[in-house]
Image 1 (cartoon, rainbow over the protein chains, first blue to last red):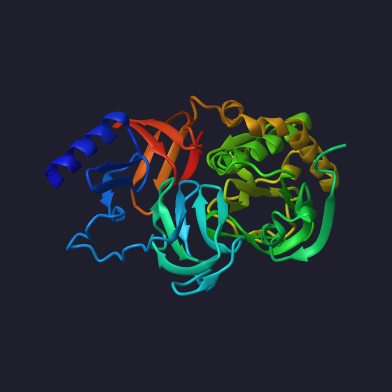
Image 2 (image 1 turned 120 degrees about the vertical axis):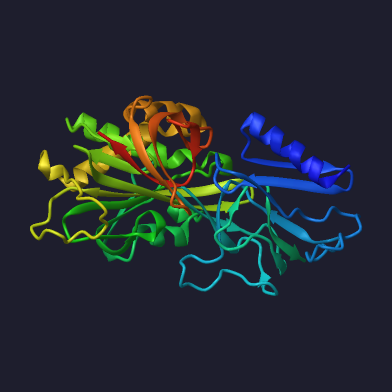
Length: 145
Length: 244
């Protein structure tokens, strides 16, 4: 199916149902659309390459190895890599983390939520940009045991 | 026996929220309240300073004794806001709740709420930070959090801070089971906030966009649903001011 046409149809579905985020798999492609602000304009965000699919030529995202563990967002919030703007990041790519270690903060209105790792291993990818609004279930970190 | 009977006083601290965040999830933190005589590094939303001179404010952070589902975290600030509001009502002080995290007295901010959590898989350990202006300081301008002049409970009546803390924690204990039904918290909070009907002016985070409209209700995750001239908006991140 034509990608632009699919995106257009998904956008219409989001508007019709007043959704803040939408993630669907069409064939081998995954489309993920979120609003920067719920209720605001919809934008497409880069979706992870589907497992087993040939990497798209335009994509620079690294492919996940088979045993990579993914930490996903347990709630909607703004992603921060450190406790304060001038503080050191909780983790960097290449760092080794232990299960239970704090990886990031997701801020949602009146709540600062420290997100801990379910896994021990090496952080191979930090997916969102600092300050990005992430949606429920969005990938945050790749960790290889 | 209250779930929140364990109270630890500290003379001075950077911030009771920071202190609690270090021990969240540990057995010693379950149901614990940290109270500070004054603090030097209190934080409001977006890291705004909240510096309270000694004796002027009731500053505390209370950890819930049990973990909750991460998806229900949004309801906790509303729940503790209600406990503050209802306690003051019992003392004959009428306050109004303002989305997302303020308690107003006579239209000015008298208390701010900021919660912290630690999410581990399907469990979230959470603590509620409350800063309540009790006694107007002799020296004006000593409080720095300030885009608008604050209110103090002493404008209405004097309070013993320990008595006030115990009353708020008692309300938290009595209403604790509501945390299992976040939508009940939302409906009770709306009533205490004059919603529907309250008129809000909002400046959205990350943009210069401003909105003004009538608040309709809280959304499914605590967003403010507002009817504006150009239609209905669902706001999750913004500075808000209720208009009188």
